[in-house]
Length: 158
Ligand SMILES: [Zn+2]
Image (tube, rainbow, N blue to C red; front, side, top):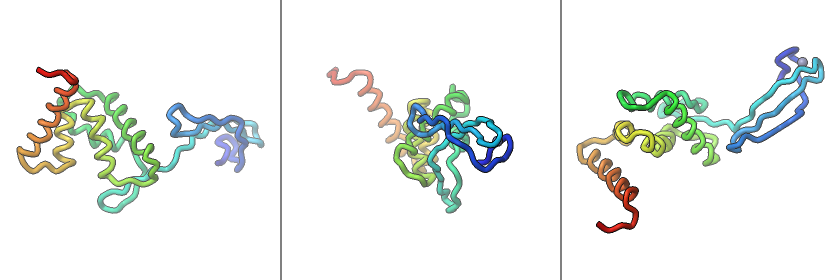
């Protein structure tokens, strides 16, 4: 990488540390020509294969915008969406894959979205999983209810 100050084609690494989540490395570099210091962040490349076959770099913004519509009118903030997109990126990166398809991203969105807002989750799931009938909604809502019961009274008989 060229020095951002003088465009010298080489630089020396003076410090290197892994981020807390272990998913990126920050390198502090110094230019041997002008002495300028700068930081580079290295992450494994992660590409998304779209349904059309087009490959593009993973984007948290695209994840957030895909979910934003399902959250209309719900108490979900832009900060919540950014946090969700970060969780999605972390979970797909943890699989170690360098290429994933949009389907896998949809799957990775379902878990954190359900924790965030169940109505938005149902809306997103209905599009993503192509719900075709009321029965599909009923099955999904029934699953949510069953999990609520399991959460509220674990191992307790009524
Ligand atoms: Zn330089």
